[in-house]
Length: 508
Ligand code: MSP
Image (tube, rainbow, N blue to C red; front, top):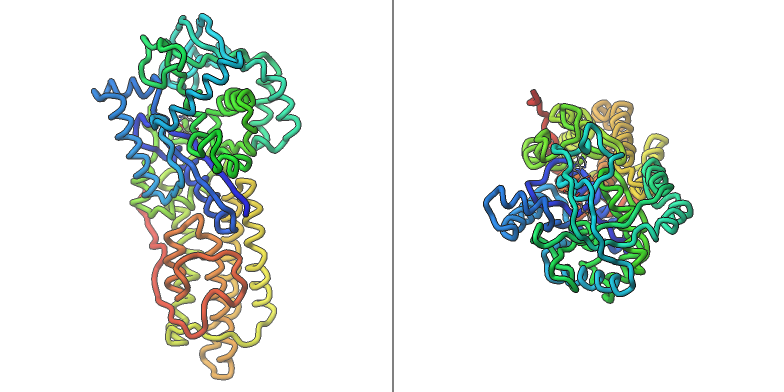
C-alpha cells in the first residue's frame, strides 16, 4: 500500500474564507480524491493558524477574547470546506494542546542543540504578513500585499540559526529540481539562497504579544506564529514517534500560494533540517486569484468573490470546475461571476450536460429507458473504447504534476468526441429502421458506458454532479476508477432523464 500526505496552508482565522483560500483547498482536495481513487492511502490536512499578532489584533477589534474569536472563525472554515466539498481527514488547530506540545518539544530540542539563541532585534515588521521584512521587499514604503507600511521594532528575540542551513538548502534545490513547482519559484528561491538569509527571529516578548505558545524555558517570550504554524504539518501525524508520521511524512506535498514561498522554503526547510525531519517531497506553489480590479483577492482589500455565495448561486461543482480550468496552478488569473457562468454554460451545460441529456432522452425514447446490450463495435466505437481506457492513466499523470486543469480539459475533449459521435452516428436515423436496431443499441450502449467513464474521471473535480450522473445512468452511486469497458452500466438496468447543469445568465 502506498501512503500519500497532502496539505493545504493552515489558514489565518481572522475572517471568513475567501476564494483565494478555496482555490488552494479545492486543488488539494481534488488531488487527494484522485490519488485515493487510484488506490493510494491518502491523508488530506487543512487547519487553522490561530495564534499571532494578526489574530490578536482582529479579536481586539471585534471586542472578543482571542480564543473565542479564533474558535468561531476556525468553525467557519470547517463549515466552508464542508460546503465546498473539501473533505479533509485532518484539521489541525494551532491552539490544540497536542500541537502546542510538539512545538514546545521542538523548541527545547533546538535550544539544547544550540540552534537557538537570544539577541536584540531591530527591524521593520509587517503585521499583515506576520514577519520582519527587508528594505528590498518594499515598494513605496510597504509590501505590495499589505495595506499598511511595516513598523520599526527593537526588542529581544530568540533566533533560530537559519543561515547555517543555507548551503544545505541550496544544494537540496540543486539536487532536486522537482522539489518546488512550477520551476520559476524554485529559481526565485535559489536566487534568495545566493545571498545570506540571516537568522530567523522565532519569539516575541510576552509584554507585546500574549497570544501564542510560550517559549518553554523563558516565560517572558511567546513563540513566533510561523514557527508554530509550520509545525502544524507534522503535529497531527503524531510527530515525532507515531506510526502515522513514519508512514505518511515521506510522501508529503504542500500546496501553498506564492506569497508564502519564503516561509515554506527558508524557514520550513531550515527548521526541518535542524530537527532531523526529511524535507517535503514536493512544494506546489500557486499564483494568485485576482479580483475584477486585477489585484490579488484578499480579505483586507475586500475585492474577493465569496466562495460560498458562488457555490450557492452556480453549484459547488461548477465553482470547483471553473477554478481548476480557469487558473492553472502556479499562475495568476481573474475569476469573476461572468467567468464562472461562461464555464457553466459552455463546458458544463452545452458540452457535458447536453451529451448526458441527449443520450438519456434517446434511451428513454428508443429503448424504454433500459440500457441496451451492445452488438458489434465498429471503428468509431473502438476509438472511444480505446480513449476511455487511456484516460485514467493520462489524468493521473497530469494530476501528479498538479495539472488538474489540463486533466479536466482532456476529459472534456473526450466529451466533445462523444458529442461528435452522436452527430456522426445519428441514432435518430437508426431508430427509423428495424434493420439498424442492433446498430442503435450499440451506439446507445457506447454512449452510456462512455458517460459512465466520464463520471468516474471527473468525480474528484465534481463529486456531487458526477454522483448524480451515475444515478441517472442507473449505475452505482460510488465512483470507480479505471473500470474496464463493459463494467460501468449494465444492460437491462433503468436510466432516468435529468438536467445536470441548468444554464445561467445572471452576471452583471
Ligand atoms: N497562516 C498562513 C499559512 C501558514 S501555513 C503553515 C497564511 N494564511 S492565509 O490565510 O493568509 O493564507 C493562506 C493561503 O491562502 C496562502 O497560501 C495564500 O497564498 C492563499 N491566498 C490568499 N489569497 C489568495 C489569492 N487571492 N489567491 C490565491 N491564493 C491566495 O498565510
